[in-house]
Length: 104
Image (cartoon, rainbow, N blue to C red; front, side):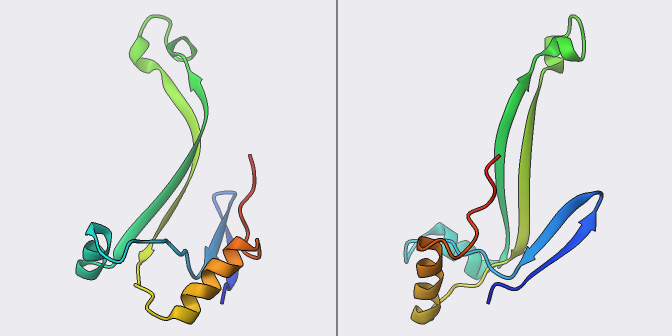
């Protein structure tokens, strides 16, 4: 079920995994939005450090910046009604059989 493929893109590794499972309440705005338009985006970021303005300009404070890394996923959402698939996804995650990611 978790078929993986990779390719090089601008010297960074791109990983394609067929599913990201998200938990949801049975009712609500998120599900209403998915039913109306299945296109979704998912973004995760990690703050690395604050870069004070003097790195870029000696007197302009607006030049301050933040160094961070991020992952952006775009795709189409599908509401999972199959109880076996729901259980399988939750069980694999709970037991660490699906990668938890790399600590940075």
